[in-house]
Structure formats: C-alpha cells, structure tokens
Length: 423
Image 1 (cartoon, helix red, strand yellow):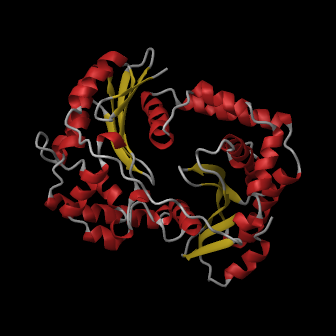
Image 2 (cartoon, rainbow, N blue to C red):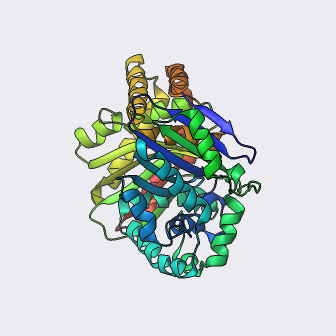
Image 3 (spheres, one colour):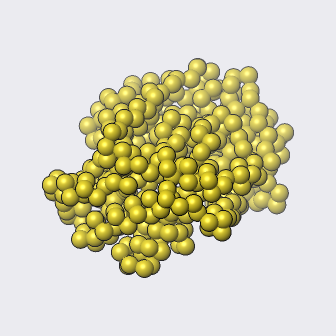
C-alpha cells in the first residue's frame, strides 16, 4: 500500500502508488502549528504559510508562483492547523516533475520579502474578519478557547490583529529556520507514481533542506471541575452553539469507540440527534457531532444552529441523547450500521490521490506510525456495545460539559443554562 523512506537528513518520504490513477499529489507536512507558538508570536505559523506563495529567486512573485501550475491545470494550496502545516500540489501524472520543482522551490527558496510581509498583513486581517463574520465557523474557535483558555491549544490559529501587525521579516525567518527542518518534515507522494523513481526525485529536489533538530511544544493543560459556558454576544439571525465534552487524545485506544459513538450521535442523516432535533422537532437545519483528537488532548462536540428561543430546549435534547448512551447499551444493529458507515465513508474519501496523501502523511507526522485503511477497519470491528457504554460513562459527566454560544444573549443567560447543563 505504501513505502516509507527516511533519508540521512531525517527527511521522511511516504510513497503511495495507486493503480489506474491519472493524477499525482505531492504533500509536504511540517510538525508545526499554533500549538508550537508563544503568545507574542501567536499566528506566525499561519502567516508564514501565506508567505511561501510570495516569491522565490526562480519565481520572483505571486504571479510566477501561481501560473506555474495554472498553466497545466494543477490544483494547489496550503493550510495551517494546531499541530501541522501543509503544502500540496496535485497535477496530471505527466506533470509530476513540474509539481516537484514548484513545491520544492517554494519550500526551500522563498524570499520572505519585507514588502510582501507588510502587504500580506492586510490579507490575513481580512481573513480573520471573515471568520469573525461567520458564526458557524467562529463558534468552533470559541469552543476551543473555552476548553483550553490562555494556552496554545486555546489560541486562534490565525492569531490576533495586534500580533499580525507586529510581524516582520526577522520574526518570520527565525520561525522558519527553527521549525522547518528535515527531521520535522514528511513528504508524501501519492497517485500515478513509481516508489523507487519518486524516491530519487525527492532526494534530488530536497537536497538543500535544513538539518536542524526538532522543537517541542507546550503540553496541553486540562483542568475542569464543573460545567463551563462561554457566550459571545452578537446580533445574529440564529444562535450557533457547540456543546460537548473533553475526551481522548489520538494515542488512546478508546478513540475508535469514541468515533463510533460520534457517528451514532450525530454523524449522519440517520443519527439520533439529526432525527430527534431536526426531523422530529424541526429545531435546526444543521446539527452534527464530531470528534477531534490531537497528540495531547481531544473532545467530542455537537454543533447546531437554532432559533434563539430554542437554546434551552436544544441543549436539553442533546444532553438527553448523551445520557442515553450511558444508561443503555446500543443495539448490535445500530453499532454495526455505525461501523459500516465509518468504514464506507473512509473508503470513499480515499478515492483521490490528494486524500491518500493526507491519510498517510498526517498519521506519520502526528502519531509517528501508520495504519492502512484495512488495519483501521480491523480496530473498528473489534469495538463492542460494552466498549461504547464504557466510553459514554467516562466522558458524559457533568464536570466535563462545555457550551460555547454565539447569539444575542447577555451574560445573565448563563445562570439559566447552567441549571440544565448536567447529565
């Protein structure tokens, strides 16, 4: 299914050949993100991601960067998360060398010009404003702020305006030199590739990568003794909220049971919450439950958008479903449906070369080991109804409950909500 190579520099390559593929995706993942930042430079991982697209000696400006792959109909982008920053290019298989030359040039030879840094501040501040104007997206950031507070895990990936305005070339280059090293980097090539040939190409294109050591990050601190509520007052047409609990990190074997529990709760259109909240009561257009698992913390959360007057009713309904998993074992039929859904949706998601690249590379960077889809499916199949009940009993307790809300509410609203925030 894949071949892993570690070069002398420490740079890792994951080669994932795909039969009958017409595309090739090259994905670079670096073990850095907002969790690796200090308060004074919060947002710099994301800022630096933008700066890779501003020019190299070979491609001196954004136009030259962009048109390289635009000329061949390629797709490309980058992203920053709490723990990983990524850059990718997807092209027709005959343009593989163009993609490799393009992505290695950006990654190794970006100029980080001071004028471009000053100009990009405006772009990123508008990106920040865009999220602030989108309560469906912003409530997720407030949720993590509520969980983790004033530590890297609770800070915004994009940063705050004050920090963004204070970034300069010295800070950007210092962060690049200290975090973008061979030992911190994984490259995944997936699609119409020959693993032996791609190994030689990667070795040649990335021979100039820095060989500095890796840098750690502050461990997430979690401390909660009672249910917590965060209200962001805003005149919205809907109330958007995240309600959930602290759970497990990515290394915890209970994560498979947790994922199945999430599916049964609100993972699809036949899930309990979708039927109870949307279909039977018409309270929400969107409602879904998901799981997030990082290297040192994790959570389960249900998000929905509802009429302002229905906040208490919606919270109570969700908590009732949470409690039902503690009180009674799920049926074998419902559990099997969740397993089949999780395995089926995973298989469907891996049809393309870019999704294959992400599947393998993220595991290597965050976990340090890789499970194939079949190996994951075997872990999922092991989960029993008793496992689901044990996980529910562990996480669905009042002391772990958290509720983040965006809507036209005063702080006094907390008192009424706290009375119902219990399982």
